[in-house]
Image (cartoon, rainbow, N blue to C red):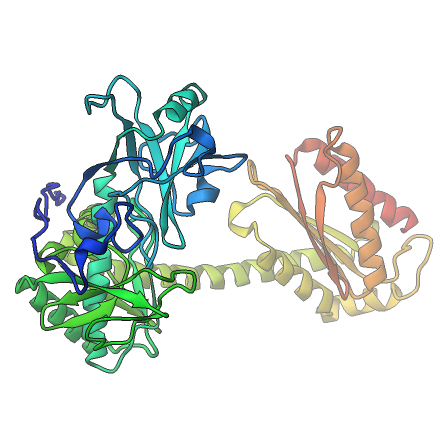
Length: 525
């Protein structure tokens, strides 16, 4: 069984009347709203809004409805396109400004909104035109600029519509995700402040990511501290603390109003606008340009986890989706481990202990097998036809790795048993029957269907080992298909060379290997 959470709304439809509180004369607000006074910032729960393109009177060249040549949506928005839109949308990207908007431009760590822009007919209806996709929104000083994808056949329609009413519809699922997490971040940072842990920065990925945001702290928390912070956050959420925004006029980089807290993080290119403070009842007051929920009750839970200097959290719709995904993952893990969900950790620990035991046992068996393979190779040295050059070819998957082959080659090269010492001394000088002056072992491993094959050449004589490796590599390259040269990749030093052989190792490779090694035994390199 898995837990499935119904997508029930966790936010009230209407924004409370006292959510937005001006600290100056509201009659001075112009019809064209600047960033800080946008509809998305005045009414957090507003999903749709109508507005005129700001001052647009002559179409695409008016400065407010402008195409962006040769620019992709991803480059322009920096935060991904609206969910459900094509991966490669048709049409150019346009910059469009409106008198007001429910689309939030990215800022304060919160990604930009996406949505739809509807061209309205003279009667205020949406008409027959396909809505245009708003792929992002940017702040340019005090202005909010929409990045709208416009198909070629709609460009003329858009130009002629400049100055007419339009309706903008925000992608509410995306906004709700971002707004919940941003509100939760303010709450979390406020609680951390009471413990002398200021938030240095924070990060949030854009919807529909399930990646958990985090706040960066000057030091890591203990698990006990993290649990205490989590409990405090959840208690305040359960109390449904009110959240509101108060707005002051910015003057010479400062602000009017009570000034009870320094305005931090105001962008340098934002001048002559307003300062917005987010207030959580009896908890926090902090400058912020983002969108905030009017009640903490809408934030759902705020589970946390710990890594050095970063405290992860989640909230709102993402918390529900995160919990849903975690529940499914837990069920799949229980199924794979053949146990109940409650016993997953215990069974996983048992499985890990067994895995380590198997690795240890396998390692011991490989060592024993390596000794046996080495002894068998050493026994071949005494045979005159081998001439100090031994070839070991493996086809077993269990030993298809460089560690095993290197163990065999190193043991072979350094071994000098009593039964082979006499033979080794007589082979110190090259003779017509034995042209190689030093022992060399060549190991190849090519199990069926394994890619790539492995090759090791090892000798105390570095030049000799390299020369043999190069000759074998050239022979394998010659067997490759046209355009598939350079099959042997790798190198080495101090007499040991390890290579990977691309492509299939078949009967012709094995036969050619034997022929080349026989030539080396007879004539040297």
